Image (tube, rainbow, N blue to C red; front, side, top):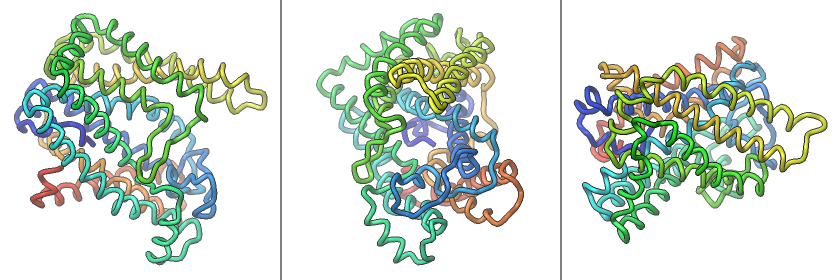
Length: 405
């Protein structure tokens, strides 16, 4: 899942048995959440019906295949996922930046990031995204011809890149931090000071993260359309969340400056010991977020500014509490990784890159079946996990791709 995680550059022994084991397992878990998210969107209770390929707004970028068989539970799963999983990915990605900059220097670190993130982004844009969206073309009534699809594709107002948007944003964040580090080498230590004491007082760091993320999120959330994406060619990003994601990336750097497995990520720290309390923390913010969505789409919603502010605060709290709950759980219960877990962690980045092709095509192939949205969602998820896992294992045997993945 994680191009971002230069953790894979560490030895397998360190990943499996050392203090990094909880983080590696958490990274793999979030990868599975991403696959599940895209697998069940086909059966989302409010998925838009298929329409012409170029009809505005172009919604098939989020719903490549739409099945008339739905399941209401997938709506709740995808809503909760959307509240935190991408933010947590940026946080985990930041954890290993400090070690990378110190070991390789600004130039070496940026070069390695360009190889690990930039090259896969280009491959995803040119090959994987068109493959993943071809079923959307077919369901819209397009001819089963790659030539006709290519012609329609090149006439779109932007170049859909699918989940690969994460890679270019992460590369851009890394380039910004690397540039600052080249000018002010002490910036990593300064960020690290923000996380000092987080191991013994995680609540203080939590509230600092919430405040910083809201300061970055609310100004954009209240001035841009709900759910808006900025699209320039293949470079896509959620407009209101870009600052919020950068805050989580910086937070990861701050925590990782002390070393992964120390401070907030100490398996024996307060966050891990009080893991049970963090499982309760997301309940109210998640309920508040769901309530905001219901009110927003009611016949007589309140003024938008009220919805944006209340919903924005609920989002910020839900994101942080869900992220801390996940981190606390893995710190508490993961001490080492078995062979299957080690394989999943080693292949997680490649699985993130290729999974969208499999979730889209499996959803399309199952359209004629009358199994119901629940069963279909489970089958697509399980099938996509197995197929992208095996595909990544094969790709990693190739010299260049093995070095990247």
